[in-house]
Length: 119
Image (cartoon, rainbow, N blue to C red; front, top):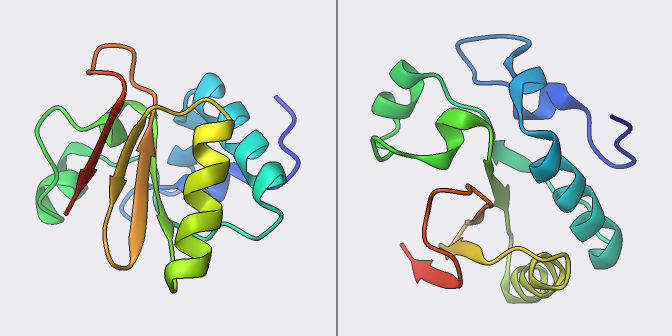
């Protein structure tokens, strides 16, 4: 898998170096496409999570982060939030969570599609 804008290490769980390599290829390719559409950098706050790290950060027990289908992208204002959100939708993502400081995006095949939620 060849990514243009990301290194898999950006998706490592903090308690398991190298775990970003366990991210799902389908997810990473879509995210790479979204980054290209956006034309701005995406800072990854959270990618793959171990069960213990997910519990530590208060993640859901069936979080898409646990299986490498999710990432949280840092946002620093309404303009970057809009650009990133538009690019994610254009790239085909349909599971998005919006918070003040980040956007969660995932494409887990077993979770509801066509949803946007807030934190």
